[in-house]
Length: 487
Image (cartoon, rainbow, N blue to C red; front, side, top):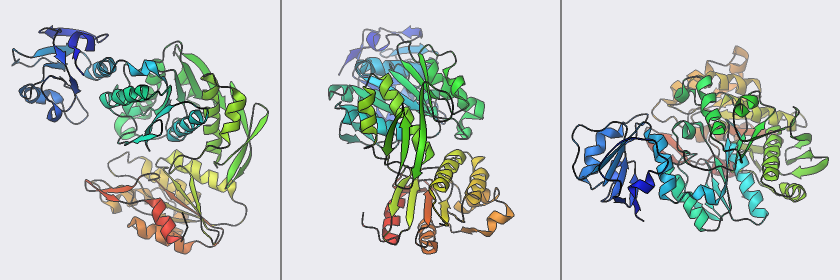
């Protein structure tokens, strides 16, 4: 596919151009190693590497044009140079143009917030598929084009990959797409140039402060998504979260709220909360769901509200809600023949861990032990580690601290930082078992019939990352093996 440079640059704020925009490019590249003849190379200033260094390499490999924020001193006379103020913003717009603005052919709905993104996007995909629509999904767990799975490497892909995927969705006849929108993707302008039909805000708690610097920076990143929504789109926020009003401030989109506790445009009430599901009242009608936990009641309210705002019949939506399945690794429940319940959850922030443990407390019916296995990822926000230790110890009867994805850090050092937040009383009920499989095995050995094991932090992940290498590792499969569960 070839396109004239002048068409690729449509709506891009250009500062200077050296050369003719009549040339044609047949590919967009942000990695100089992937440049082929007739490519357009975009020299982004990344968080680690400044791609301006690689402009000569891209030109040598045949790039017909270069988009950059600083014109190189030695320009090649056969190459077109386009100078812009913001390469990330420009890349999003150019990628959308290059792939024929696919988001305009879909009703694209973005979900952002600290917790609940994967579940809400996944449930919306299930729901709209059940309503008879060909539907796309872009999520942490998986990307789907109708029923076809595409591998997921980031919560939100880069702008080129994302627009290519949206084009494939439109070409496959999809009419809706539900997408997780991470704070990194918003800050790095990966969603620039996309046309959204709606945006959903779940909540905002302690996460990614290693990247954003502080909570205010994290909040600004999330809010920027709602600030970019067009007037015809809807902006739907969780009224039970104190940051909902901030998200909706100044957006020109149509504003709506949902909630279980606070007054909202879409209100629901949690009637029953059991280990095998929950009963909700929505609009005066009772709905049984296979999902458990108060946070899933909130997620279901977001799904219902978004579906209604996307002009679906409320009665049909309520009927289908009861058949929706949890997202993989999100409060995923296994039950052994001896009555031991194991729950796998991606909770890797203090608030997510607290929500999951509170949900477990709410479904306890007697004197069951809650045995929690938890760690924290390496090379990420260190401030949350002692908080997670404190929460895990306070809300568990037994606690096993272990390794998560240590990445370049030493697992024992991470565990010590988690332990720093645990009180003297909490330490007495805690074990440290660095090997994650051995930690899960210890939890299974400690569990008696009726007890609940929570294995937190990795959820859907099928690997453990140690010193730059990803080793196969699946919490779910290990629990199935150790508890002799027939999957």
